Length: 363
Image 1 (tube, rainbow, N blue to C red):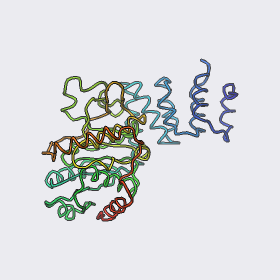
Image 2 (image 1 turned 180 degrees about the vertical axis):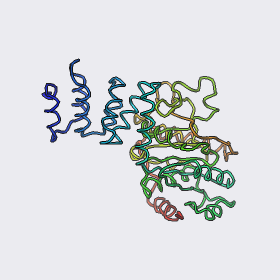
Image 3 (image 1 turned 135 degrees about the vertical axis):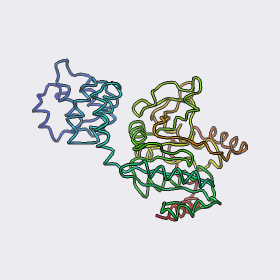
Image 4 (image 1 turned 180 degrees about the horizontal axis):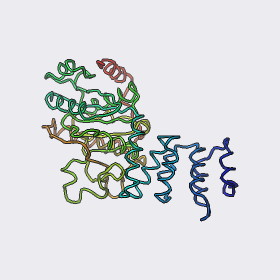
């Protein structure tokens, strides 16, 4: 720990030094009250051999320190500056200076990202049309759009063709398979940084709606939709304010909108393809995020992170089947101890079929 006694100029001259996460934590834990904490953290962030977010999100420095560091890194690394000001915002949510900086720095960083938006649909062309039109009207910045259609028998495919919307045209294989089509296309083909899945009856209602969803996905790995039915239900919300930096933690979860970061997606993978029809697939997927340390908890009962910013839900009639639901619930219980990461297929034959469906997407 010789670095602890070093002068600022000496620290900055150690350009060959790489700092591990354990060393970074030790430097902060053992620094004296008279230490220049801004210089120490600047050194750590400049020489980190770990994702800087791992350090920033777990250190309880003064919010002013994170704010000053965010300003310092603003022209050097938009990503690092974003994480620093987000941490300041979490620690001081109502601070006007920090809030203004959070908005502007977030805008600068998000402008560098490619966002993927998948709309999931089946036999609900009118709902789909309204949602896609809302996405186009209210989404700003760089984004990739795809409609995952699960073999609709109505005019869904014709509408997508007429409106030049990238879409699947596949046999009906259930909601999990369909969500995985959108996720795989956005993740593997379009290489997006953040993935957002919308069901066709849940649509944007204000400009730049995706900002809160992207921020929440980056900060927490994954985020769900806090439907008004959930947040208005007695004792359903355990904590949080519903913002991107302080999501609700809810005892209930819906799959009408969900978002995740690319890093979290790479860790957790896809919805389990063994689920068929309606029910349990999305819940099992989000519980895998939580088991791997992303936001939420398994203590006493499951608690899921959610926001409700920028969306309205029409709550279209579902294709709920009680027999399928019970079957899927039994499967969820059976596989709860299995590996946290899942592929979008069960075997080689299913993989080949799935990849052909992806190749069929009309772009």
